Image (cartoon, rainbow, N blue to C red; front, side, top):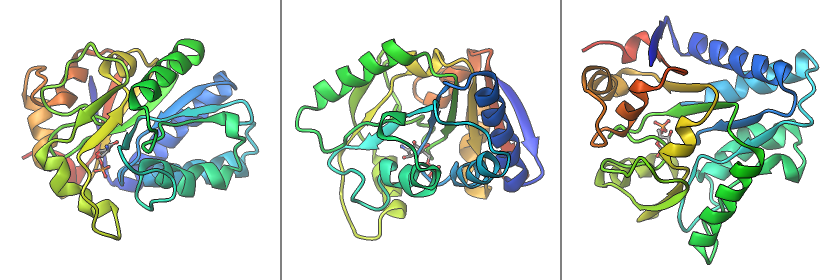
Length: 239
Ligand code: GLP
């Protein structure tokens, strides 16, 4: 894992946006994965502007889901799908077949995992994946203690995740489980970018940087991965 510190959030997002654009230019049918959550919102904003203003052909690109809260889907503001749809997919007017997403409301969640594994076997590996870091070091919903050999799987949300989840939703909802791509699929991506910004991420970023790879802090699992870059702003750097 390489570490890059940028002056501010805008610069981080701009660099990451350019990486995605480069991926699409090199491979017009690229498979792209962008985490839900707050961190990548600036990347989505810049990506929409760049793809449109530079008239880049993204008609064959596919976007694949990283994770979702179990029990909710697109109709719930703050779900991963709603976040990506509002900020990226709908703005790009993507065709249905360009979006492969977990349905957090699926009756058969195991089947939902199998479906995702099949999609990845067919269209994968992911060409570029943009990840955030949870306050407990989680990646997607790969929570502390995760089995790193898993593909898509259902997880019990960690206590920290349950505490933090309120920030995503207008209404108070209590969710217990998540559905997520596994580390096997994440690590197989051709390019991995982990991003973190802001003072509130400084402690966890520091823990990731100073710990040896251990599932107790899931993001550390990516430290051994060559094609992985951690991009942070000055506020999230050092402690
Ligand atoms: C969330 C999501 C992840 C996200 C991470 C960080 O719970 N499951 O996909 O990357 O935690 O979220 P944020 O960017 O909002 O800090």
